[in-house]
Length: 116
Image 1 (tube, rainbow, N blue to C red):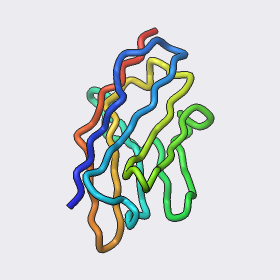
Image 2 (cartoon, rainbow, N blue to C red):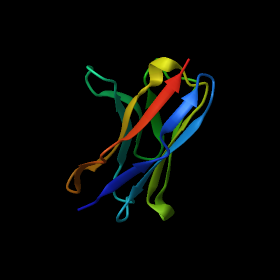
Image 3 (cartoon, rainbow, N blue to C red):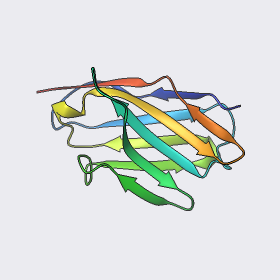
Image 4 (tube, helix red, strand yellow):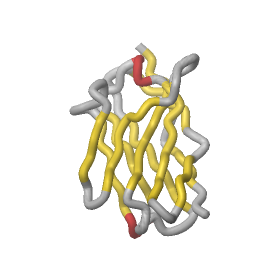
């Protein structure tokens, strides 16, 4: 079983940047799917960015060109670099890792607040 802990959230002004980290308690080498999701108050949890297999990435239209997902297997960490932040990016951000036969795990989230 893998435990995920997100960090790096906080309060930032519009136009600023943050880098979220998702540290796993064990190796993530075998997890071919890593993703970041977010949930704003009163809304459903939505996909922000994901990386599949050898590095194929997908992003929500609202964050394309501003956010970048990456992973460091040696550090068992998944990152989300967020630039040019907007107030509408305010949400709790969750990390997810998954692989067939290995399980599907979520972190508890980190809050990002973008002020206008």
